[in-house]
Image (cartoon, rainbow, N blue to C red; front, top):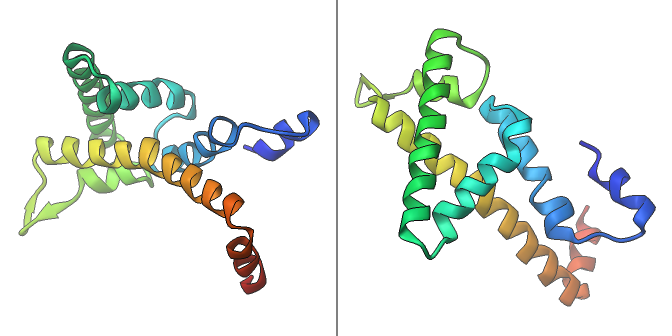
Length: 143
């Protein structure tokens, strides 16, 4: 998980690809209790569902994500762990347990946030700070 050590010998990096997509995805998947080796597979599906102009690609990615999530819901119901998926399977709404659809929808929303939105936001923040060094200096000074 030491992304900086991996790019250090190159003396440069492409921030979004080398860091912004990798670091938050790794942390997110650990919190969710999902395998790190699924990172790029899930990232691709989320990207297809969010960004593809082709409705068939979007639909296929959505179906595949739902099937993936459903497998993890079943697994965590049978084998609870200390992770967010287990917590979601035990959640309630107005004193009743979540339905499978509510579990799936919650996890799907979190997948989109954790695998796409956070990485994109890191890229925008970094670009802004690189373009506004005075603001980067203010942040450094407050640490």
